[in-house]
Amino acid sequence: MIRLRLSSLGMPAVLIALCAFFTWSTWTVEAAAGERGGRAAGALWESRPDPSGKAYVVGGLNDESRAFAEGVRESLNGRAEVHVILGTPSEARTALLGLVGRGSPPRAILATPDAGAWAIWPALRAATPELRPLRLITPPHQGRSAFLSSTNLRNVADQISVIAILAVGMTLVIITGGIDLSVGSLVALSAVAAAWVIRAFGGERAGIGAMALASLASITAAGLIGALSGGVITRFRVPPFIATLAVMQVASGLAFIASEGQTIYAMPQAFTDLGRGNALAAMPNAVLIMLALYAAAHLLMNRTIMGRRIYAVGGNPEAARLSGVQNARTLLFVYTVSGLTAGIGGVITASQLKAGSPTYGVMYELYAIAAVVVGGTSLSGGQGRVFGTLVGAFIIAVIRNGMNLMSVEPYTQKVILGLVILGAVLVDQLRRRH
Image (cartoon, rainbow, N blue to C red; front, top):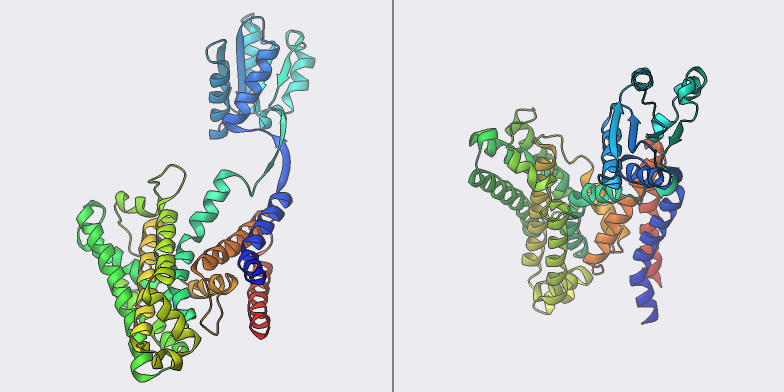
């Protein structure tokens, strides 16, 4: 029992350790920027306010400087008159000299971190006696981790959502002792099918009904092709690797034929909200769909007869058959589910990229298999947990994201990810031996 608990906690512990490592490795100490920096600078100004009651904000011509100015206004909240000077260093110098010429030289400047490093300040003080008492207020330096930023964590979850959705169906397939190499091509076919139907119903002017029909049709088509894989495997006893490899080529070819080898654009804005929007402020829609599918798969595998049959077929097909389990129907079911999840992934991909292309989904099947294996599912079948697959998907996402933040070159990233997958397979083999 203790060993079982440690085994179940192993992958989450690895994920936590990876998050801790990338938090530490991307930790930097820098001046607060944007709106947060403006609030901090405003608080410093209030500790030693300008006697004139005016706060001058200086920054560059960018969104971050504008946000900085808004942060200053929010911090001072009408307790001072805020004047904003945004532009190049020479434009800021001209504006400040204009204030001196009008007899109202500023006593303090609230500068963005970039503006605070401009070389004009020593020259201004030296050449203009009225500006020698000038105080330059910049936001204080604070420590932060690029990995732990809310934007980055959201991106990690958003970027892994499609791979994790594919891994739901892949988990069921691998637990039965099979493999599905067609899911990447089914993502492309589903995305092209959705875009093709939407274009046929008006493109950017398509309504909600057309978008729902396009999504349903593309997911159904992917599910039927998944059922085709299952039928070939069960009816003709073709090895899953060969059957799904052939179906992968068929699905890819159909995607190119349907799109005529081109990317299909002209998608309505409402359709992009499926993959990019936020039904909840803190969580993208794609992540919500992913979590809902994992919850459904968890209930299927742990609370239904079909779930027990899937484990039985993967653990010992002959014993399952002698126990009354219809192995063929069980395998047909899991390959159909794998196709359906690939179809859902394709619709989300088309929504996120606002287009359908036959080149989508390249290498997705390998990433999905990697998530399943890293999550603890045995390639020999009969063992695995849906929750473990979700953890495995996030482990892969965190490793890729962390290496990007650390500027690790793409070729090295491939080597590291390959070693991670190899390590997961070796751990599985050692666990089965003992």
